Image 1 (spheres, one colour):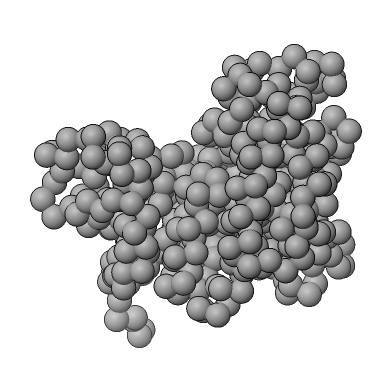
Image 2: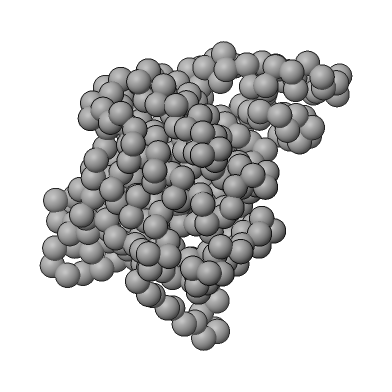
Length: 399
């Protein structure tokens, strides 16, 4: 019998480690990414970590992981922290230039773009400019500048792998056929904590109630987006550009159990879905090890217990964010930047107690409908209208 020179175990050990830069390592996605890396048996290695102001946790991560670089994008936060306990061999970089430095380094294989909000676009852009593989958790990169980002990836022969659980599910299911055979994509949404609320109940929602998500543990901004279903609206736009779909090929269904993470329907009527417990470590690991699958620490389904899966159509009147997402996906141009900028400002105002929960989506709608639409904007124009939309929210609140 002829034996392979290397057994499967030895072959796995013989592969060089994949070097990973985590932009936003102190956030939920960043922390989960570090867990995935720590149990990889050396196959994955964190060589760069970044944070904005959470420097205490960043320093703790640096002591545990010992990356080559850490980046603090807020210069004041970096200046005020005592870095004397930083391990030898770990370089501290400060400001946006630090992000550009680590994402362009030849030793970095994958950049995890996990900075929340449109602030994450810079890191995504730098990584793609350098021709890196980007594990994309920052959906705003594609919401704000989808055509520009995808064009840059094509020109630089860079690759974007989705980390959002819904887009990872679509990506996995699409591998069962050709892109031209896809009839539609169905994104699932838990419905958040207010899935069954009436319009009158939504008018009385408090910050504490909105932050209590029934199935996922996320940061405050994303949790509020999930409660308004704006998160799903942004995911519609992200899917439009990431998979090259038309807006009428994207639908949303409510699925409170958060086990089916999305589905792809092919032209022959077959529907393929990806199922797993709500645990972000699974899509993160898939993006970091693709096209291979490896054992990991993500939660597994227990098929020894009864499982009921419920699906229901969303109420577009109570959750108008979904209408906005479909409209922005259809329009393209500057619509995504304006919707995202307005939503980020509105959510911040709600968390600060300056805007009611039920006013978040109307504010975004009014600003979107009245912005100077440009069907083919430059990156500078996109960023300009992002800033404009944020200021318009403040004016809308004073009106």
